[in-house]
Image 1 (cartoon, rainbow, N blue to C red):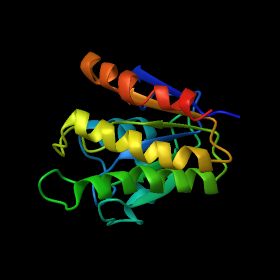
Image 2 (cartoon, one colour; image 1 turned 135 degrees about the vertical axis):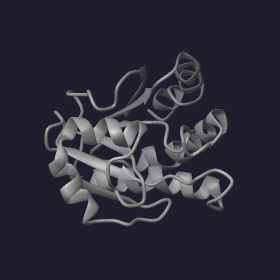
Image 3 (cartoon, rainbow, N blue to C red; image 1 turned 180 degrees about the horizontal axis):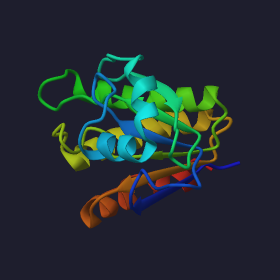
Length: 175
C-alpha cells in the first residue's frame, strides 16, 4: 500500500487526525519559539517535563514523547542543523527526518505531520532543505511498514508551492 503525502498550509499543533507530530526542537527540548513554542503551548507543561529529561540532543537526533494536551498520541522531537554552523548540514537534516521516521515505525505510527525542519529560525534555505527532504523520503518511504500518511505543514504559500512541486509527487512515484 502506498504512503499518502500531503502538503498543507496549517498549524502543526492542530492536527487531530494524525497519530504524531514532529517538533522542530531546540537542543534542550524545552519550549522555544516557532514550531517548538506552538507545540509546547498547546501540549501543556507536562510535555516539557518529559522532553527536557531527554535532552540535550545533537543535530540530526530525534526522541519521542507523549503528546499530552495535543490531540495526537506522540510528539517526535528533532534538532535540525543551524545552517552555516552545523556541518554537514544536508546529512544532519536528512538524519532528522530519517530518525523521526524510524521512531514512528518503532511505535507503529500510521500518520505523522512534519514542519519544514531548520528552514525557519535555523536559517536553512527553504528550497535547498526541500531537496534534502525529497531525497531522504525517496530513500526511506519504500522501507516503511506502518506509516501510511505523511503530512507536511507549511506556514507560507511560497513554502507550500515548493513542497507541492518537490515533495508531494514522491508519494505517487513510490506507490
